[in-house]
Image (cartoon, rainbow, N blue to C red):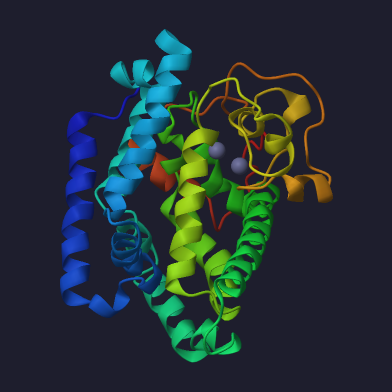
Length: 322
Ligand SMILES: [Zn+2]
Ligand SMILES: [Zn+2]
């Protein structure tokens, strides 16, 4: 069995950290406006830093997951990490140490930072179409509208990644996870991150979302994301069927059972799956997650480079599962 060696993982983290320092020093303009504001905005708004808040959410979900699942919990799996859990830990470390934007920046040669900034500079501030001194109700209503639009774009972006052979090459890394560790949501190929900024971020900027609003939306989805990648057997009842995806709702999306394929694409709200016919109505719940056939257990660098194999030659069919 091939595993990610500690030396290999440390080397990748080292290279990414060095690149991060180089980019922030040499090319500050390439820093993504919306990602950079994340830190300062959250710090100001919530009296705790971005990472404290994020860490609190992760620890909170891990503790609840541990209490409910005991020896099958995410913490128990992370204590004896196999191939799948090591990959989760690697991508979580990248996110945790603030390097989540570095790999996408490198893969996109800086474009991913410059394009949103360029678009926003031309679009201006969304508050221009609100009254000069908007009431709290108006501000809240605007945020709600952005939330719905943001989630709509995320639904279609996610569905497209499953339906396009090319995009599936990158998204399958997320579905190669063979267990849920709460950290599994961090496991996203950098190219997927780059493209999601273009597909979801740019339209939101054009619609006038501000960095503050975008940051808040992103934080909400990060918190939901932790829950979605836990094996706690909770559906959240009607709330999970209509308002916010439950752990079981998203587990079905990662299922190896054929009746679950092409279902439950939603990001935060299940309502889009219901409207567009991809909601899973049955009662069968999968006890395992992963791709069919299972992913070859490749070293980390191989996993990152696999999607590019054969790109340009004859069109190979990735093994789409769901
Ligand atoms: Zn998916
Ligand atoms: Zn997932």
